[in-house]
Length: 186
Image (cartoon, rainbow, N blue to C red; front, side):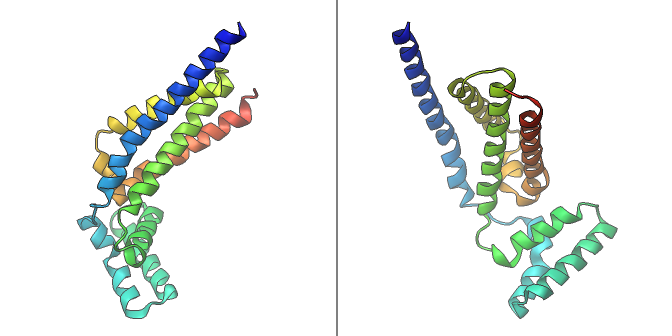
C-alpha cells in the first residue's frame, strides 16, 4: 500500500511541475510582448500635465499638487474614479515614462497570485484536497482564464483598464481567500 501511495505522490509531483511549466509557457510570451507596449491616447492625456510639471520642476510637492487638482477636475467633469485616475497619473507620468511594460508585469502577476491563493485556500480548506492536487487544478484554471480573456490588451496591457478593472478584481480575490481562511477552519 505504501508503495502505491508513494508512486501516486510521485506522479502528482511530476504533474505539478509540468503544470508550472504550462503556466510559464502561457506567461513568458505575454511578458515578452509587454516590452513592446506603449502609452495610448488616454494614458498620454492623463499623464501629460504631470510629466510636464516633473520635467520643469522636479518637485514632488508640485507634482502631487497637480495630480490632486487634476483629480478634482476629473471628478467634476467626467467620472468619480478619482483615486484610480490619480494613481494612473502618478504611475504613468514622470516616473515610468519609458517603463510602461511594467504595468503588465504588475497586473498579470497580481492576478495570478490572487487567483492561486483563492483557489488553494478553497480547495484545501473547504474541499480538504492536498496541496499538489489543489495546485494542479488551480494552475489549470488560471492558465485557461489568461488564455481565454476576452480583451487581454485591456486586461493586462492597457494600464487604465488594468488598474481600474484587473487590479480590483485581484484584490477582491485576495479578500475572498482571506475570508475563507478566517471562517473555514481546517
